[in-house]
Amino acid sequence: MLPLIRKNISDDAAPYHPAQASPAEDDVGRALDLLAGAERPLLVVGGGGWSEQAGRDVIEFAEASNVPVVASFRRQDYVDNASPAYGGPLTIGMDPKLAQRVKDADVMLALGTRLGEIATQQYSLLDVPRPRQMLIHVHADPDELGRVFEADLPIVSGSPQFAAQVRPVDGAARAGWVESARADYLANLRHDPLPGDVQLGDAVDSSDAEVAKARVIGDGQEVGVGRS
Image (cartoon, helix red, strand yellow):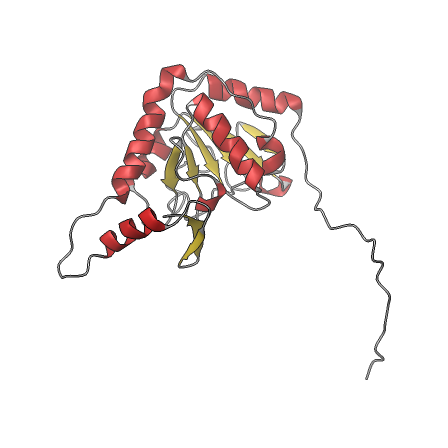
């Protein structure tokens, strides 16, 4: 049997903070230029290393710039689902209108997400290896960039670090694009009556009305604010 080793741990040890890369200023500028010139931009959030502040930064940028924000698989809680810029989740049983919106986007900013199998419907929403969409791919792991999709602008950065540096761009000409994304998302939440006395859709609607925005609830293995 190995002897038990006792060791004193310093009480003044600092909390662990993982190191994260920050984007180059020129790369942020190029990304903003591409988004400013887009007619149908789309911002996809996902991956790890997220923060509450990153969610606020992304939504502030998206609302001011008329860029719809969608969440990759099981990442609905990254941004405020009540935002007029939120367009829904790229998940199992994806809304067909949202899938078509991904295909129709001319510039896509993938922030932190790998754009994996579920979020891309088995890699059918983006061409491999070269998507039709102009792709800005931001990821903290440089090995993920170019692994599946060849980005027009690959950026090695943590998501919070990138989100903190973006500034609003002029998106007045595409107000209808973000409004239709939001309308499609809300329409997809509506449900038709089912046979029988128990209407689960009504139960979910009732829960949405009662759950405070600050409360976090679980939906299977997914976590989100209100209805995910």
